[in-house]
View 1 (cartoon, rainbow, N blue to C red):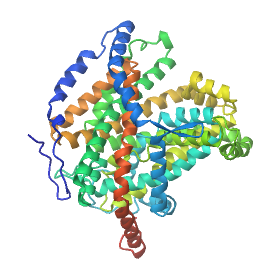
View 2 (view 1 turned 180 degrees about the vertical axis):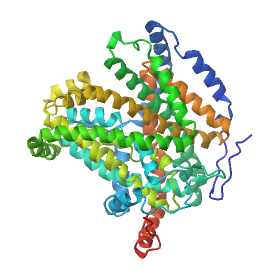
View 3 (view 1 turned 180 degrees about the horizontal axis):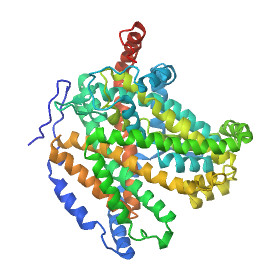
View 4 (view 1 turned 90 degrees about the vertical axis):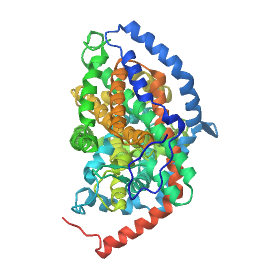
Length: 535
């Protein structure tokens, strides 16, 4: 028995359903989740459930972690291969696409503004909404905590390598998001499905490699589903719940030991949003993301304005520290590793997730959406992460010795370190940061629910039962994640997210030549007026 996939005239290849996917496990999984949701459990009982689940998950997580994050020795340093894989891909695509990250920047802003929007284009959301939906999945705790950890461990010089990684990552986003639109499925009801699952299977089939495409697509889809439940859901709600408990009294908080209450509230909110699909998600993210970015960047600008005389020295620390043999983390290589790693974890360029959201954009020109997508790493890493780093440096929190740096990262905590830096000038910022973390968590969860859903329907079909099964499971995981401290489960989610980059980038190498040709054709038609501005 096989899944009946909706047919599209654009669909070039439909992979047969793997036997493992013929199991009717969604119902069983939902039943299991209802059984373990800790309604009314005491802290001790919840802890025992945590321990039991961690004992089961730990061997699986350890095994996958060794595969995804295995390291290569470079001198006295260990470099995670996944980092090399992501950065090497970004550099290759930048050069091969003739530095589209720079040449296409102005045009990207024009497209986002709607200047080239053509009435009647297929798709579900505008270019701006697709951008904010994708940004909501990347702009978040990584920009707050991740930067603090990078500066603490690598010194101010790590910021330089973060910026550089973000600039190169713009090209990766361009390639994967162009392919997302080019090979998306369009259905009779106007909805679309796209992303690496589709361009890997259909694109490689077109090149005479159907089996390879099918394997890569299935691997990506499985990893994406795992990542959506873990890193895109449980980790987010757990951090938001902990932040809420901290600002409402700690152990005296009404939520202490009863985190599931907040989880239930968030599950209802998320469920109400994601039930309407990408259109509903985009209506929320196109308001939340600009609001979050405005508040956070606004606060950063106030602090930088207060410390305006210190900015030149901070910039000098960033540049000189990037090439200093006495860097906090063991010289140039160590600082480079820290900076590149935090940038990759922040903007997710090369992971492939963002192309799922961008695939829903209203356009008949795939390259136009790829051009829009290259703005993501710029906003996420070059702008927001750089501002965070500057605030930390000018307020003195980036001037640690090596031992102090490691202590600050491990004991103060990334978010707390950033919060303390902002609090030097804005005493009320910790409260605002708490609200921001909750909004970041909400926006990340709804974006990742869409990524996971599209991977789920790729494997199990586009039926209503399939869609609602995933959405219900996703919402149940919100409640579980808010009440538990499942270390192994959270690590599993992060591992799965970065596992997505292996099949994605591998496939991008095969498909990059057609994207370069499409890019040249697109800009030739823009110059000739065949693609014209409507506004």
